[in-house]
Image (cartoon, rainbow, N blue to C red):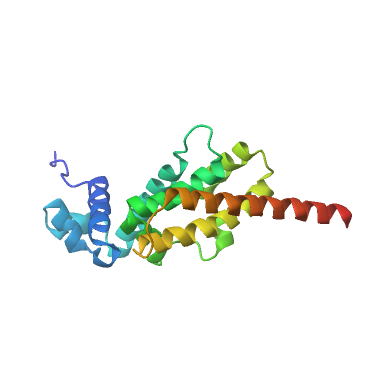
Length: 194
């Protein structure tokens, strides 16, 4: 019977997450992952035949981590605002992973609408829809507005150009949310009069 593999795919992905977390996606390569694992590059290349395959696997794991982080909403908080604040907090707590997810060019979606329609976002939209008591169409429209606002804040923070002021950002998110809701309601009224 052959010996069990010591370095598994899961261990490689975890090590790669640490490389990105500590050194940034710019320094993410097979040698850095192997050094994190304290092994040669052979086990990494055995499980992932190319660095692109490894990057895609690590990207998917980082995306799952990001989604779980966003969904950790305190009870009683508006889910859209809670998810928006968590999105920004992720950039504060995990700036390198945030940059890897949103500034590395590895996202599979090529447009905002592809992102909003992606299967991975459905659980987030469902929580928002249920918590806000809106139709899925309205939820998606409002989500896009709030998400773009939150993404701007998070990107600036992740690139060390802005301090995280949770109270101020929460106030701005609330205004953005209220404005998006008013716009959605106005669109409904305009459609009813046509």
